[in-house]
Length: 181
Image (cartoon, rainbow, N blue to C red; front, side, top):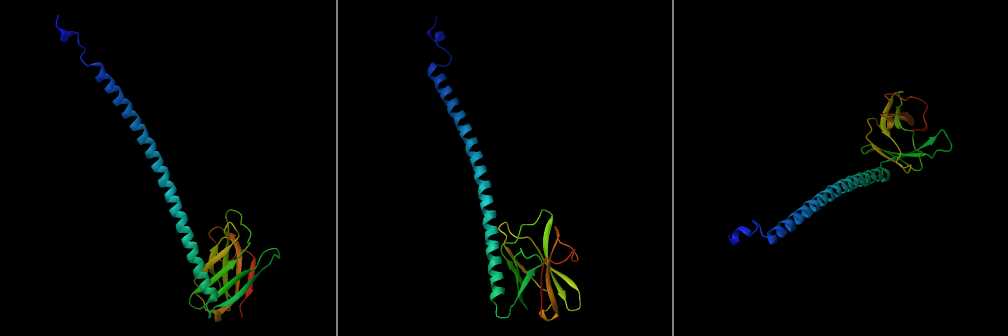
């Protein structure tokens, strides 16, 4: 008999190397799946952080623009008084070119499906929608809206509570109002 016929087709060290290579490959594939999963999770977190950053930048820019209207020498200030004494007043600042800024703090949250709507009443009696808004979760109101009416034509400012999306005309009595003189 020939010695070569007694030898296995693959030596034991080759089987050991193959098993080690299979284990290393399996581990590498599993680690790659874990890394891919973590990468997807990190991308989602990054996208969320970027969206939050954009929202904060937008809020900061709105604050700057509202402050510009408030502090402009040509702006006129109005205090919209609530019909319910437990509500805080709203502050409106009207500038002939920059529009109308509306601010308030500690405004109560609205029920789902409800919104606040700012109206301008002209001296001729027409009611024009200026803005639709909701207070922030902290009760802050900060609105900047263009005006399609001059200050001389304005008789009053009013805010009503309306269905989400607003209404073409006020749906009830004002919750806040101010006369423009």
